[in-house]
Image (cartoon, rainbow, N blue to C red):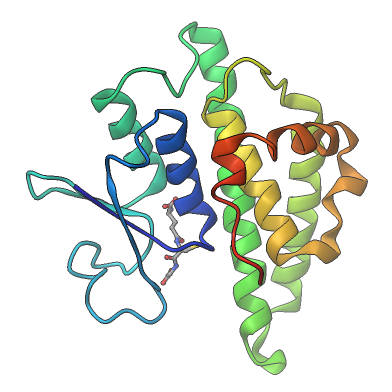
Length: 201
Ligand SMILES: N[C@@H](CCC(=O)N[C@@H](CS)C(=O)NCC(=O)O)C(=O)O
């Protein structure tokens, strides 16, 4: 089994935190690649040239963070990555989905920022920025974090906020989310989160 990651990818970080929470970080070989500058190592497993990607021992490749985490939770059920009770599970899935889209929007802003200014789409940048702010405010109200478990809602939120700090500090998300700001101080100390922080930009 081989997991392809980059150390700056927030999607890969979700999987790396999930592995650490399950105590599997040392059991699954992690291969650091650059999806933007691949020599064929990554595309041999993921033709889309994205991380994370997990090559299973039977040859099947999983090419999306949530798919990989779903497999991981079935293959290694303890400790679980989701709450057991149906209502709690639905709530956690809603939070995780919101966090995943926040990540996608943040990546969009990062990629737009790398384009020559004349080719950037100002209306889309504005639309995504406003959605991000509303999404962060919604998370601040809707996310009732457990301090006992670190399920996929917590993992997703920690990765989304950590990525904003890493790539979009000027958005100053804490201004929009005082409760999340306090929670993130706690979450950042968790070994799985601390141990997967991106290297200095
Ligand atoms: N939906 C995917 C998104 C993965 C993704 O966009 N990964 C980025 C790294 S942050 C990547 O590999 N980008 C390279 C590319 O899109 O060509 C997931 O959740 O795993």
